[in-house]
Image (tube, rainbow, N blue to C red; front, top):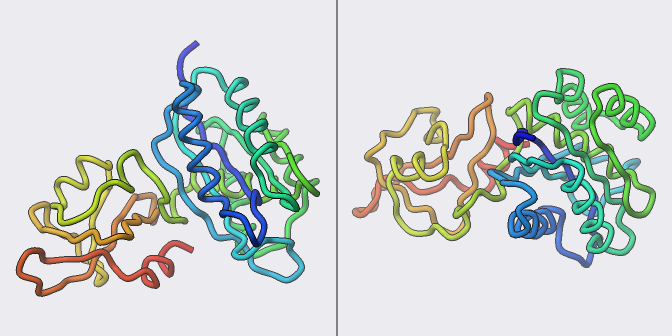
Length: 246
């Protein structure tokens, strides 16, 4: 059986005292890869609707993993076991696993709706079943299935979220060229905050917060110009990056 492109969505694994869903998904990704269950290329964070009628921990964000696997069933079982064991007490963890090609317009619409509407578990299950997408609630009230399915749709659409992890991303610091970044991380563009594409030879100080965003179906790193003698740009401020990813 050949390997298939997949998206894995996870939501609501935390409580107010625990590490967030992004941390938990990064940890799960590490184990998935060590066991050879999948090759993960990227993890993204997706902001959903913040409303007092929705139970969430602090920000109501979900996470999506993109990669390939040769055995979806084994990967699903491992993720279920991992999240059931490691999700925080009081969490309502949900898991979604979809083939890239199975993530249709209806699922992408679901993701967009989850940013502005209060949705139901029943509707989430109906949509997932209609596309043969795996969806399972694992802890608590299991309402995390809503955000897990939304994360899959938003990531497939490619116009939302910021990158939490790519292989080697968190280890890279200091000053690098745009060419190096694009080659190593398969970025589509490096762009300044005025909307201008930055040249391949330009040097960027990555600092300690290197977060590309998904925008217009591209993976883009936003930077801002500086007059430092050793580099021409630095990573754009956190507030700017957040405003362009949610």
